[in-house]
Image (tube, rainbow, N blue to C red; front, side):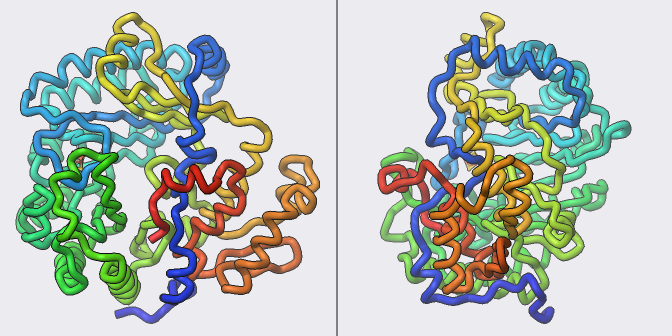
Amino acid sequence: MTQPNQWYVPWDEELIRKYDINAPRYTSYPTAVQFTTLQPIEVEGHLSQQITNVSALSLYIHIPFCEHICFYCACNKIATKDRERPDKYLDMLEREMAIQAHNFGQRPITQLHLGGGTPTFLTIAQMTRLLDLISIYFEWDPEVHPGEFSIELDPRETSDDMLLLLRSRGFNRVSFGVQDFNHDTQVAINRVQSFELVEEKVNRARELGYTSINFDLICGLPKQTSASFIESWKKTLQLSPDRISLYNYAHLPERFKPQRRIDPKTVPIADEKLTILRDSIELLQKEGYIYIGMDHFAKPTDELSKALEAGTLQRNFQGYSTHAETDMLALGVSGISQINGAYLQNHHEVAPYEALIEKKQLAIKRGIFLNDDDKIRQWVIGQLACQGRLSLTELSEKFNINAVEYFDAEWQRMIELSKDDLVTINEDVVTVRPLGRLLLRPILLAFDAYFNEQTSQRFSKVL
Ligand code: SF4
């Protein structure tokens, strides 16, 4: 057990209930709710400006296939047992890479993430092909341009050969979908994976030299109780992951079809869920993990904690990141790119995605080009979410505005939040307090120009 440190988040049930509202998680600003259909000509014009850019680039590739469907799933995936199915998808990815390499091929890749779906649904031959394609079309060479190269792993779908292949090609981070070790919960969500299996894969990853291991767990799953989840934490702690993402299950069967297979009577009620969350946060902090913010915990030795301390934390579609602010290029169905003041999202469905790529066209369908106000608010939200502070003087200088006048109403909101100790205000600097890191979304919300009663229904509860 470790002593509370400066990052220790206290639990204040009254305030937590007060601020447990529907709000975005701000992996982007504006959020995806604001995306509209884009015209190919404006997208192409925007991307062609990148041709002379040689700064570092982040690459995300979406692999949508899953053999088994988890009943809690809200991701974009394709259920299939056909292992040849990805071959055509890889053909399309190759064509998409060829198109995008024209504008981005010269930029060194310092961050790569394979997400899904289940990226390891690919066979060894298919994965080898994918990695070869990345090396061919992009400036990706981990020895020349070191960085963070990561993949989401389903322990049931991760062979030793796959771990070996990825490691030999420079991957250094893995994220295991654990969700919960409780067997009854695993049955209820259709994701049965034993502790021994996860342990074996984690040990193998460590032996191979992966430097950071992340676990995803989910709070609020069916048949989960505070007592059962504590047992899951004990098992988790035995495996000592460097980072933990603790997500909140939102039961929305009308929106996510697989969730219709979950009996709502088995889902913990709000009070029980809050207890599960409280016990989880307290336990993880006592065991030495630092609460980074919005679902993320990390060991003090992990790069995320160091970045929190150094004020260099970043945030993107994968959550918190240590990487310097880089553009992100996303390939594959539903991928969202963030390129020089624009968010650009590929088609969600495979058929239209493939149809456009086959015609050698980009598959970007929706997105938004940020206006000046969006850029200012995006920077403000990033400052508060990552650095935990906002200076109006800095803001004024950076954007050549009078920030005091510009954010007069928002500042009044900060003053209100300071009364509940979510933030402190010192002259023109607002600093997020430890409890404010737990209740970050209501703070960021104050600077969101789009959020209203109607859009609020699109977002999950804060906790
Ligand atoms: S949760 Fe992940 S592994 Fe499970 S069905 Fe959804 S995308 Fe596939």
